[in-house]
View (cartoon, rainbow, N blue to C red):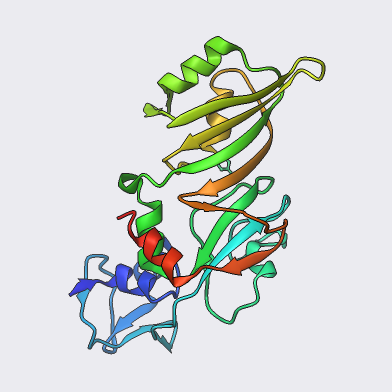
Length: 236
Ligand code: URA
């Protein structure tokens, strides 16, 4: 027996958070009965219906995408902006694993595999994510050390696993910094630098776990191999 919201999320229908909202809103029926309790457990034999549609288990698909600037990491946008789904040709109900900001570029995984999504986004699994940040001024060495030691953000310490100053451009007064973080709080890289008095002018994610962009151009994607999917499961 598994929790209803988990089963819905793992079917690829939607994220666990959205599944919880659907349950609370009374849109989910189990064996014909409306269920609004989040803790409700269901088995593989139960028939789950959402918004009048029977939940079925889709084949799982996995995409590695090089997200361009000016694209939202959601499945739809109320301001009608371009979403990451506009780039990917699939009939499956995929969604992004975590988020990149509208103007952040680089690696984003998309899947309909809720189980893998949970593994990769759960803070205890420590999936490393590497970014290159362009700062609005040269990075001072004391600040680099401060960041290495960890910065309190909303009362929780964010300690990058690696911070590397790639370049301080003294003429333009900008810096390029490579930073690896295992957590996934929203805007975490920008907030980290802002806490030390820097603005992030450009941000690119160049690595997610062991996955890199290789030769994927901006806006391009590819499917993951089975081997890569198994390796991602190993983060559990
Ligand atoms: N940190 C940020 O500040 N933005 C992103 O898009 C990802 C990580």
